[in-house]
Structure formats: C-alpha cells, structure tokens
Length: 380
Image (cartoon, rainbow, N blue to C red; front, side, top):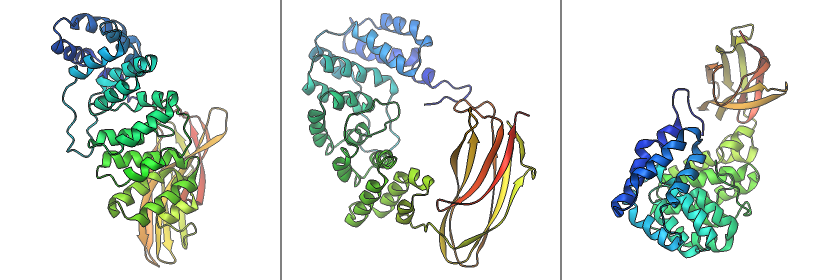
C-alpha cells in the first residue's frame, strides 16, 4: 500500500499510542503484564521497520510475555480482546490494524504446534475485530482440506466479517498476501453462497475475488456472473454493482464477453469528430498536464463506455498502456457528445516514475481503440 507525500501510513497505524493501547488490553486482563516494557521494546525498533515488518516485530515482542503453550496463549489473547465490531453494520468497519500482530501470533504458534481447532477458534474471534485474511492463507497452504472445511462452516457465520474472511482468504491474488496453492476456482463454491450476502463489505470481496480470477480465466468469471443473474438471489442493483466491479480488468482489456454482459457492444455504431490536444504541438513537461477534447456522434442508439489510454514510456524505452475512465453514457441516434479532460504528469509521484519520450494518448470506446495521438513528454 502506497503512502502519499507527507503522510506515513505505517506511522499512522503503528505508533506509541496504538502500541500502548494493545499492551494495555493485556495489562487490563492481568496487572502483572509488563505494559511499559512491551511499549519500550516495540518503540525502540519501530522507526526502522516497514509496515509488514512492524507486524512481525510486535508479535515477537508480545510472545516474550505470553505462555509457551499455544492453548494458553490463545486463552490470554481471547480474554484480552475488546468487544467485536458491530455486527449490524454492512460496510466500512475495518477495525483496528494494531490487532494484526495477534493474527501473526496465531499463524506462528498455531502452525508450529499443529493446534488447528484452537487456531480456527481464535482466528474467528480475531477477524471480528480486524481481518485475519493474511494468517488464514498460511493455514490454507499447510492444511488446505481442513481449512476449507472450516471455511464451509464460516461461510454461514452470523457475523459478516467472518463470512468476508472466506472470500478474502481464498482470493487468488490478495494484495500483500502470500500465494495460496489452491486451484484458481477453489473459492467459487463459497462465492456462490456469498454473492447473495446482504452486506457490501462481503460482496465487494466477492467482486474482487472474481476480478482476480478474471486475470487468468475470464470466461469462467463471465459464466459465473451470468449464472448469478439467472438465479436472481441477489438484489438486482447490488448484483449490477458487483458485476461492474468484478469485470473492471476485463473491461479495460476490451473483453467482448464482459462488455456484452454489461450491455456494451464491442463495435458501436459511432463516429469520432475532431480529436484535439492542448497544447496543440503535443509537447508536455513532466509536472504539467496534457489536455484533450474529442467529439462522439452516435449513428444509432448505443450504450458507451469511454476511456482514455496512455501508453507510457518505460525505463527501457518500451511503452506500456494504462487505462483511465472517462465517461459512461447512453446515446440516441444523432446525439453528439464532446468530452474533454486534462491529465497531469506529476514528477514527484511515489508509486511510479515518468520517463521522457514519445507517449501515446488514445480514445477507447467499449474496449476498442477509436483514435490516437502521439505526444512528447520532456523533462522541462
């Protein structure tokens, strides 16, 4: 996860206050717990570590003051936890990231001592405070059959955070998460149940899971979404949202079946009018922006998804396209639409680097490149 300039995510999530809060939970359970010593040890090393390293380090410090037997450690952790997250909410209730080290402790000790029953019990409790989608993947890799069997129980759990864990934990390409050695479609039986979930927190995970699959097996995702449409088990508006979110990668690729499922023809009956750049000579300094304007004329009734694509010059001189959303619109025959946009090229971005050279700007409609203009990005 990137950090914007001037804001440190790792320091926002892990700092003296959050570490003291976590240590204080254990001290409240047992006055003998050395709260101050834990905070001092953690804060002595914290500044030098990145986010994931901080999770592991905090877990290691806590382990010094927890029982060696995992069953006893699990009991200490469970009784130290605050109340679960509100089960009546439906979204945007992520819990506190400071609980991530507790999931790390479960993975490290539950795996080492092969205590699956206690591990699953505690992971279930933890995920109702903060997601354990990373630790559960380690169990999927070590004991896939047993963990999938547990997920078959969790998929029907009363708490939506537990249901979400089933989808998120089995995602093929979970950001930050270790790879799992499951078949690409191993999670589909769970998604068949979770797609009808009443909470957006769960259905967003389902859509993200499908988007992961779509990068490898696009046809499987389209077939699955069609099947869910025919089943009618989810509210139409929510399933439409899930469908759009699940197909976002395929739409950017111009996948014909995905676009058709969303109601977009891959060869729309349109004409493009003038395609202007600003500045007209197409010379743009890094740190400035490139404006463009294009006219679309509909020759028939059409539903259009209009994007613009920039082929960025990379370090070795090759170009790599990146798709940006522009507009979704329904047009009647004879309608004219003028679209304009200014795209900026920041020179101080932390997530990517710009290179001078001849770039290309294209207008993409329903996944098809309809027009393009080259422009020159220079250092200024």
